Length: 220
Image 1 (spheres, rainbow, N blue to C red):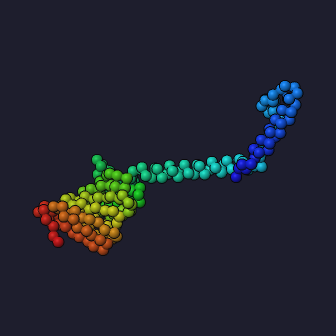
Image 2: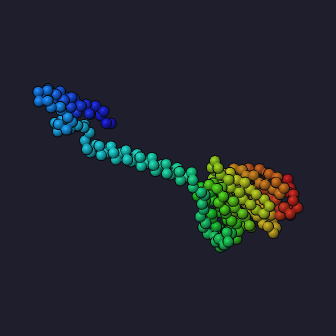
Image 3: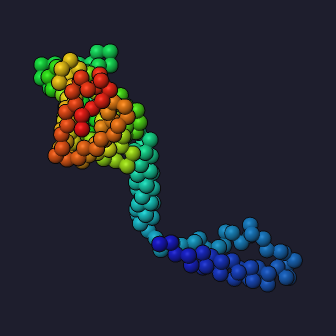
């Protein structure tokens, strides 16, 4: 901590020298000036060693650097967009296909989409923690991490699954079995044909045949 009393010896020396100069100048008609006094004033002293001062400056610089780094990190997180990495699949024209085994989409928020062999789907980032997945055919195992602004949607034929944070299996067969949804954790909202909303929670499952989608109605 800097000693605020440090300048006082220097001020006292100035006052003392002024008094002496004035006494001598009275007979010589010489007015003392700062230029005359400056060489006679003892230099200011400090109780802080150069090493301690350097260490203190380095410490302050380190604190400022950490604060700036934290600010930049928080700013980056606040402004960053969702991104994902594909492993074990091929993308053609925006459509991902799992070939010769499973394909995994790992998202930057910790969420993941695992596609079974021969599954076709697409993933579009639509916000900071928001993504839109279109399941063309096949089966997905989905894990979505919950954030305050999480908004994941999964489209399968005429159906839409809306997710905040959960884990489930979603299958779509456009030529036969239709929709299959099985919940592992959390809950989702399923938008059916005609706009009807259905809520499914952990442990629940649901199958909606393709025929019901064409007819514009769903079984209870």
